[in-house]
Length: 198
Ligand SMILES: [Zn+2]
Image 1: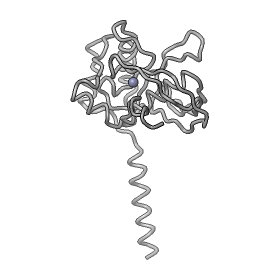
Image 2: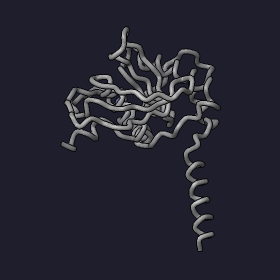
Image 3: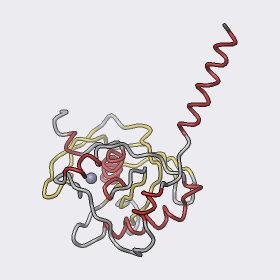
Image 4: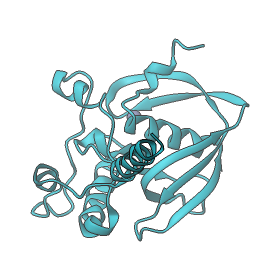
């Protein structure tokens, strides 16, 4: 019996570590990122399109940065071009909003000098402050709509930078709201989902 349990736990541990391993981009994902379109914006998925709205509700998968570093780099450039497009300027964007179901977000750091846009890979919020504040939010995927949302003021964030280095960081204020909004997208959550929970 003991041997059975050891084998059982061994299988579980193996399955768990396997599930944790991020897979490299598939052909369809590489086609979307496509390097034939240097510096071009992506089309933004919006909830008024039925197919897009189904896609926006799916969970994003982790990125294998070791195997896809150059593609992530290239994708990030096009993502930046998309969020800074004068047609639809934003302060943040998540990869699923342009059709890539992967854990990549771009956030404008209002808490840093010159307010740069930065890319975050496999970001996770480790903890939230109890104190909350309400602020007006809008989303590139929900055109012509904004509303007040209550969110925790501080978060502890864990992520990889573009070089694969792991960081743990405390973020507060408006920048923390952007991180929460974008990481919600990676879990298929839209800011409108928070409106009736008060
Ligand atoms: Zn959004």
